[in-house]
Image (tube, rainbow, N blue to C red; front, top):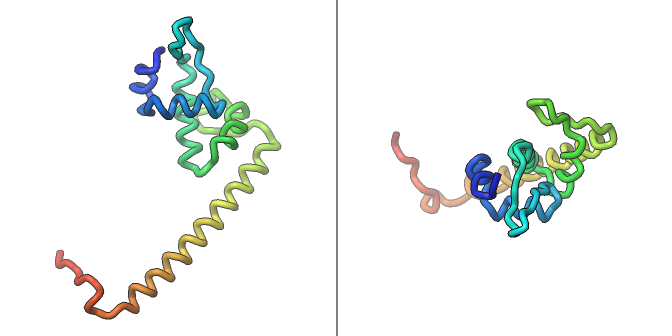
Length: 126
């Protein structure tokens, strides 16, 4: 399928598809004219890329994950044992980031709560 069809099927903008290709995540065939031609399997690959990005993984880590994913599974299942350790470390890193953000949010809430009543907006009656 051509680029426009891939955009329509995946909801991913052309620029992102080109970026995924540059990062080694997609490898569409090329026509002699230079146009990209995507395989049907590329639609699922893009969906997996989007899921892994939403999970907080970098494109370089996604490039390592994609070849180790069970292609028949509905879920992303890493099949390479050495990759599972890397994913666990990434999971822990994200957990630490969440904790740091929660601490920052609590501190900011305390600062806002300490502001004079005049500086705070009045709650809107529902």
